[in-house]
Amino acid sequence: MPPAGRPRFVAGNRPRVAVVGGGIAGLAAATALAERGAQVTLYEREAELGGRLAGWSTRLADGSEVTMSRGFHAFFRQYYNLRGLLRRTDPDLARLEGLPDYPLLRRGGLTDSFARVPRTPPLSAAAFVALSPTFAWRDLAAIDATAALPMLDVRIPEVYRRYDGISADAFLETIRFPEAARHLAFEVFTRSFFTHPRDLSAAELLLMFHIYFLGSSEGLLFDVPTEPFPQALWQPLAHYLCGLGVHLRTGAPVESVRPMPSGEVEVVTRAAESRRYHALVLALDTAGLRQVVQASSHLGDPAWRAGIAALRSAPPFLVSRLWLNRPVASDRPGFLGTSGYDGLDNISVLDRWEGEAARWASRSGGSVIELHAYAVDEHADRREVQERIAGQLHHIYPETRDARIVDVRHEWRQDCPVFPVGGHSRRPGVLTPHPTVVLAGDLVRTDLPVALMERAATTGFQAANALLARWGVSGQTLWTVPRAGRSRLLRTLARMRCR
Image: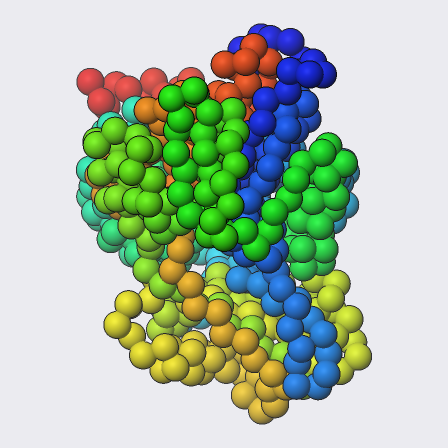
């Protein structure tokens, strides 16, 4: 709960706040501030809002105008704060549609599903093991149950103090987690952080297990937008923010910021424009935050600046979208997670759930396929990677071998945060050395059990709340799964082991 305060600013006493970054975190911060009457200017360097979920128009070889993006994102039902943001323009979340399953496929034909897993913890965790074909009885008997007990009692932030110093791979090896299940399930989860399990903090892995299996009743099924991101999410939210008086400045990269002796903050754009605000939210990706801080010599103290300079991005990832002249088999799922397929991490059949793709497929008689490859070696030949994962598509969905590619787009990016072993304490928090400058984004440290897009939305609201509290205005109520496991028996067993 935010600190108590008056509901909104009174006329004539409305602070000017700059929000730098138009992704989920910046949009959440701008929303909370503007709803309470602050005068908000939002700066976004790109022409479109949405950050890493932005979309843009492109013309295909057949003349079709379509929306390209950086690809599939799962809107898990534990994303309470993100979903609360989207409800501002879509109260019933009608622009999100649930996929019936979260299927996984490992080379060799081993498959898994989360559709049958009950949602009530701890039954969800037990059923994940009991119903999964990747867990043989001999594998279960080999697990070091005592060493695995911490998975049943994840507490925030203690999990970081105890397990941030080892990798996800090392932890699963220590408890003798079955190899097939480790590669099929947990590798898929950890690579959703755009990094390899050997490089991911075990604390982040345990946090995910807590969020999806023991801390919530939503399970591992998820929703997807029924139209491309701009039409389904960001254009309606931009209209809503404009109605609140927010000044949206897209295509306006911020060069530097400067806290002033008066307490105001000066924001300088790349076009050499300079404006002063009463407060500032920096909601940037890793590279963007580093660049702004480096160019802002008066921002922060030496220790804080060194921490920002040390931040790194995850390895490159590839999104390949193919428009094919024939459909894939009718039983192909809308989304399939894959493991062991030479770098291919998942396949989406967009025309199964996205309206624009479905309309193109209906007109052309074809299909729209998207392939993701995470944590690609920085020195890899990119053309070879593109061809290799397309070859894996042909292996998994053989009917695509003879399909003609009407058009294709390859998006290579390297701008996601990395959560390395021992990195949690070095990540910046929402607060900075300046009380009127706050941070937001999925790279920002928070003591709430959130991850990925939900971390971005949550820290965006937290950044707004921190500023609003200074002015005596009540902020946004936040929702998360519990900070500790919900089963008293499992917590007791795990704590007995720890003692």
